[in-house]
Length: 248
View: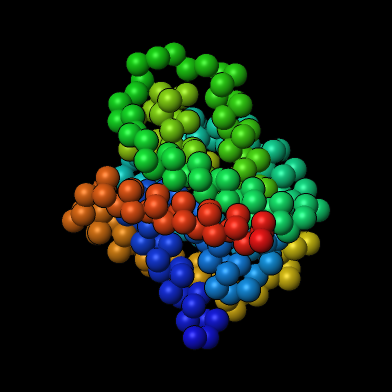
């Protein structure tokens, strides 16, 4: 199968997961780019940022139109992650490829754990702690910059549990945070981004955007909990494969 067809197929699957689950699907972008399309880990994390920006910005428009984006809260949360995203994005290129792969496998396990843990659907019952909010924003920015993942699986729980947003507003606002952090991290990688294979990355991102719309329709027909379990199992399998590939 040609690289273009693989990119389109992988992008569609990742977009489907993003649309159905509202976050976490972009975690599959990096392993797909590495193992299906022969990107190096450094190039894959940079290309993943392009894909995350395209899908998150598109989804952000839809959530904003429905009134589920808290712009001020999201801007402040994203501001805490800007510098860490830039610094981590610039530093990632100097890390060994094996270290990046293992770090990504660890994040995939965390993402799976979040999917397997029942989410809080109500919030706003506790005071907002500025220090915790700043630390959460900085941590998310660093992960986005270093590994090229959107981090919706971390952003949504943080916005619910730390900033007291209700779930639908947290999902919409997380897209603003993810988009801002990803743009900052990509800017920090300008030297690397110029070497990307845009003939593959562009179609990959386009297919992910289109797949996200189908994912929304899928979520309306299939139990969200069932989808979360399936995707969590896929993430755990991917993490195990990546870790084994490095160790062996």
